[in-house]
Image 1 (cartoon, rainbow, N blue to C red):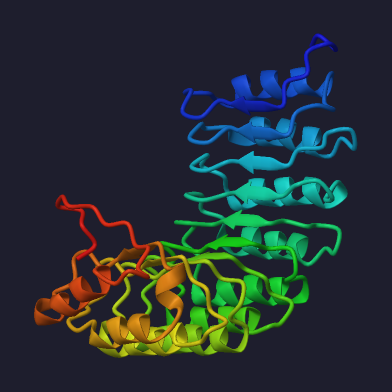
Image 2 (image 1 turned 90 degrees about the vertical axis):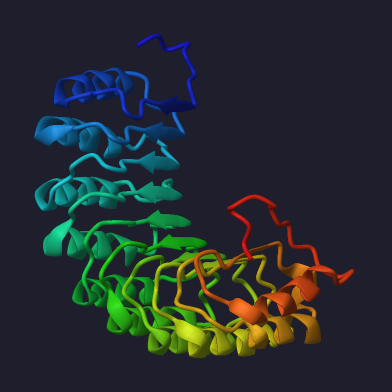
Length: 306
């Protein structure tokens, strides 16, 4: 509570904290709120009273938090409502929000979406990995993002059952010229080659911003890779990281051809093709790695991307 104490970053991840501990921390911060910029309470069971006290702190106009990490805090629908309501009353400072590994439910997603529509809310990074988001909830989220797309730079919807339907809704955001997303993670989203085709089609119409794309754990197959290869041929597409771990790929010839025929090879730094049975086409990828324009960093151990 010392007013001369000007802490900017506080990390309390995995501290076996309960609602009592969270209440003590937030009470202390209430008396000296103006300096803290990053708060990490991930993997603690905050409980109803902990979330309520945190929300009271978030409503304080002197509290100018920029990064809030609540990953794996067992946050419920009701608690999500309390948190988002607090952020609505003081929306202008937060830039990064991590709610991954929490069961937000229908009302939680709806309230978060209402917050995302607020033009004063200028969030740049949103992590909702493993929140059990459905394709219907994905529609609500993406509709909100579509109404206020210009600030978001990173979006993680991995490990949610959004399927091709949810991905199609997301594509409405990606193709918007106001969308400047740089990192998109859609690992294990039950997407197929159809969803991959929709993503690549959307990115073709708005290609210049994305730097990282993670589609690992989806059944993209060779046709999905073919669509990605067509996207890489776009000279405005300057992707640096492409993750396709365990995507049911057997042939990367179209991918290697697009890399050698365009400037894409000058930009790409990471390519993850682990756990794909690419067989004979692996040699073509090795030829790409020998190209003097290739900037890919490749390990030589069992984690090698080839």
